[in-house]
Structure formats: C-alpha cells, structure tokens
Amino acid sequence: MVTVIEEDGTISKAIVAKEAAKDVADVFVKNKVQVSWADARPGPLMTALDWLLPILTLLAIGIIGWRVFASMGGHGSFEIADSAGGQTVTFKDVAGVDEARAELSETIDFLRDPLKFGRLGGRAPRGILLSGPPGTGKTLLARAAANEARVPFLSVSGSSFQEKFAGLGAARVRRLFARARKLAPCVIFIDEIDALGRRRGRGNDSASADQDQTLNQLLVEMDGFEQLGAVVVIASTNRPDILDQALTRPGRFDREITVNLADLRGREQILKVHARNLKLEDGLDLSWIARGTPGFSGADLANLLNEAAIFATRDNSPAVGRPHVEYARDKILMGVERLGFMMDEDERYATAVHEAGHVAVGLAVKNGDPIHKVSILPRGRALGVTQALPERDRLMKKREYLEDQVAMLLGGRAAEMLLLDTMTAGASNDIERAVEIARKMVAEFGMSPLGPIHLGRPEDPHSQTLLDRIEKATNDIIDAQLKRACDVVDSKREEIARLVAGLMDHDTLDSDEIQISFGLKAEQAAA
Ligand code: ADP
Ligand code: ZN
Image 1 (cartoon, rainbow, N blue to C red):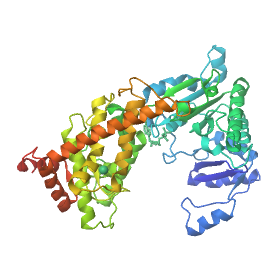
Image 2 (image 1 turned 180 degrees about the horizontal axis):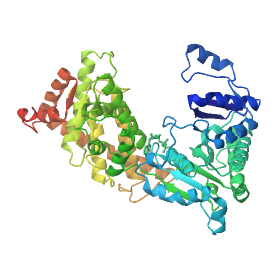
Image 3 (image 1 turned 45 degrees about the horizontal axis):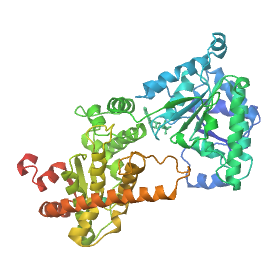
C-alpha cells in the first residue's frame, strides 16, 4: 500500500504489487518526487515517525508520471486502492442493487467512449446522486462503474472540504476539478456530500459562510460540465433531504439513484459475494442467514461473515458453521460481551427483572417480533439485552406494530416500577427509542388525534402551538403504552419470576427456554 500525501493535504492510496514496488519508486525518482517507504503495518517507532515526517510529497508531475506508468501496464498491477484487498471492484462484487446498476449503464457507455456517445446525440447523466442508508454499497457502485469503464476514480469525502481556514474548501474543490479535467475521462466520487452540500444561508457565522463558499464553488464547477470534458461526478448521501436545492438542478446532480437496504433475496446475493473465499460447513446455507438478518446492510452482512470466520478460526473449526454465525450476529446486534466486568448480585437481579419485563411484554403483544434471546451479560454499553428479530422484512409498519414496539421498549421500566419498586437509569435508552417512535407516529405518520400532519424539515418554521400539541400527543402515546406494559407485567408475575431465576442461573436464555418459563412450551420439547 502506497500512501501519497499531496501538498494540499489530499491523501491517496494505491496498492502496489510487491514485484512492482521498485519500478514505481523509479518512476517517482525520475520525476524528482521525494519517496520514502513505510511498512503497511507500522511498528511503534514508525507511528511516532509518522508525526514527525511528511512521508511523501507528490507534485502534479508525479501524478502524471504515475498515470503514464499505469497506462503502460505490463509492469505488475497498479490500481486505485480499494477495500477489497487490492482487487479491482466490479459489478460482480456488488449484489442486490440491479436497478441502480442498470441506471449507471449509460454513464459507463459515455465514459468508455465520450466522443462516440456525443456523436450519437446521447446525453448521459454526468452528475449522479446516490442516496440511501450507510453501508448499502453506494461507494462500491461508484467504484465499480469507474472500473467497468476503465477510467480513474477520484474519491474524496465531503467532510474533507470542511477546512479550518476560510476559502481553503473552495480552493480544494477547484483543484479537484482541475485534476479531473486532466485525467478525463474519469469519475469524481464525493462521499457524504451532505457535509458540504447543506442548504446555504443557514447561519451567519464564519464557518457557515465558508461552507456556502465551498458549495458555490462546486456549483460553478459543475456548471462548466460541457467544458469539463468526460468527467462524471457521483455523490453519495444518506440525507438527500438536507441538500441545497441548487445541487439537484438540471445540469448538476440531475439524476438521483436510490440505493435501499437489500431485501431477503438481495441479502442472500450479498452473502454469496462475501462468502466466495470462505469455507462453509455443509449444513450452513446462506438463505438461512439471510432470513435471520432483516435490516442488515451490505456492510453489516460483510461484517457478519467476517466475524463468523474469525470466530471459527479461534474455535479451530475447519469451516464456518451455524454457531459461528449466531455468535457473530449476537455480537453485531448486541455488542461485544464485556468479559471480566462483574456486576454484583443485586445489579444482576435488577437487570434480570428489567429484561424479563421486556420479554413479558414482547410475548404478550400481538404484532411484535419473536423474542430470540435474552441475556444479562453486559455487552457494549448495555447491562442486559432482549433480542427480538423480525421473521421477515417489514415493508409496511402498521400503527399496531409501532404501538407494540413502544410497549415492549417500556416493558423494562414497567417491571422496575412494579417488581423492584424503583427506577434505574438503565432504561434511558429504551425510553429514548420509545419516544422517538411515538414522536414519528404523531409528527410524521399522522397516527394521532392530531390527524395527518407532517412536521417536515427541522429548520422550517413551526408554530409553538403545533409543537406543543405534538409534544402532548407523543406523551399520550407513551403514557398509554407504559400503562399497557404495566398491566402485562402485573398479570405475568409468576412467569417473570421463573425467567428471572433462569437468567440468574444461566445469564442467557434462548427462545425455547423463554417459552418454557412462560409456559408456552413444555420442558421436554426443548431437549
Ligand atoms: P456506502 O457507500 O453505501 O456507505 P459502501 O459501498 O462503502 O457503502 O459499503 C461498505 C462495504 O460493505 C463494502 O466494501 C462491501 O464490503 C459491503 N457491501 C455494501 N453493500 C454491498 C453490496 N450491495 N454487495 C456487496 N457488498 C456490499
Ligand atoms: Zn431495557
């Protein structure tokens, strides 16, 4: 891995095959570029030196030399760095996003042969906004598009334009496009464009004035698209709603492609991509994993398989099996077990009662997700966890489902109040999430007596009366669901006591054991 730090602070990385390293150095030296080598995994000494030495200064001439070298080919592999371990990312590596991929095909044709495309009278989209949740493969798609067209990929993060000194952000935008013009045809990728593309004129402090200036510069550069030659700008965001509207005008980012979380089939395909180099046990089929991971992004799924593989290795298993995947999923959903962190018996008991409250309500409500596991082993920042997993992807969230979610979240607090006669701060995250759902029900989904209102953007003006009413309607939902949760806890005292005893003995109970405590399943059926 070669890291290049340009004078303006731009960092680029390239993976260089070992055999090619010397050739690369020669090109740099020939172009009078200062070169120094660093180990991929720096030791303690190297990290200290990192602070002291500007490792590598590369001028424009260096880039050109590098480009020439790259296009000469032959001398070992050379490519823009990517996370896939140095392999070129193609559409084969991006699964479950067929529509987005199809939408990019014109752009790829354009990049492959801009002149021919123009002759045929076509106008390919040159500014593309990829919007969607994090980890859904937006960066991957952009990278694959560039590789598929065999053009350079210039990647920057929107937040890297937030500079300490006024005017520097705008200058960086100018330099980025100047460089792209030289490299054309090429793709500029701006990750998290919302960091630089927020609506202008929000504040009158100097930071937001500078940000406005940076954004203006981007708009100016994109208006010069025709002169820009064959440059395509792809930007990604998970907050398209906060972008300045000038960005999405015709001639700028005038094509928006939404990249959503994959559905069941998409998840299976993504898993297939990431399982290519793993050895899986015969009994482990990917569709089973896909079924148990609704809501997981591509990044989550990649992480899941990676963790499972690490666990299998630690386990000395010849292949990755179900238990490894289960373990990895628990780790991702609930955080890492904090081993060595000891709770005293009182704390364990209070945690067990709190979690049992969640379970009791979760089992009692009709529209909840099945309870998968409950544990009083501290994980991450939580003291205990109750895990409910949807059986299928929920595309439509009905009011009853949301109410049940709120009730279940408040089940922990209900149990504290009724069975421990106290309240703990451990419920704070539950309450936060419950209020968030209730608020959405009122202010976005129109599911309250206030009727179908939509609060819209936070920065839009809202009357205080409306906000007060929303607050009141939200509280009403919380109150009603807390009462419901308390009723359930009150009627299930015996079952909860059994579950608490089980948790005190075993720390973690699975769904069979939970069902037995609640008399929903006979003891021997579990064995
Ligand atoms: P985003 O840019 O949307 O935040 P990334 O493209 O950076 O997401 O994805 C991060 C990682 O997650 C990828 O490097 C890849 O390993 C995995 N990943 C995400 N989406 C997909 C997908 N659709 N197919 C295969 N892998 C994916
Ligand atoms: Zn809780």
